[in-house]
Image (cartoon, rainbow, N blue to C red; front, side, top):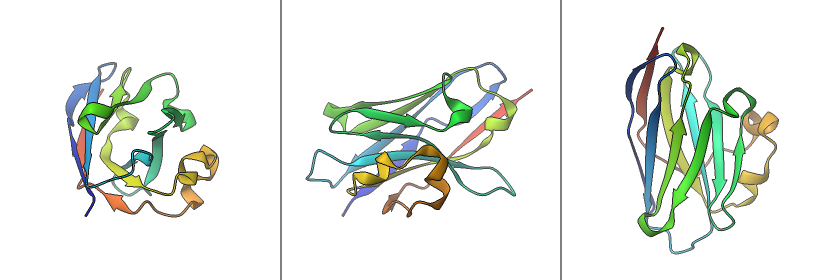
Length: 131
């Protein structure tokens, strides 16, 4: 059974930084796709960043490029989302998800909203950015 657990959310002022962590367990394959998503109240869930763990290839949605960085620690089976220069519009519940379908990471970011859902999800962690 695959488990995904997020941590690291909190409240910060605009311009500040937060780092989210996503711990995964239960995978026997070292190659999988991990994605960070977010959902603000009244809005649809959107993809934020993805990483292909084997190749460590990263992908970002346009609104976070240059501000957010997704990375991994293989020894800890953990994927991080470093969020800098945070804006009030980044306020949302952030979710981590994982899937063995590696091609999900290769889907163009502009098509993420139409791509199939990831298989394994965490419970989410709240990020609040005040102006």
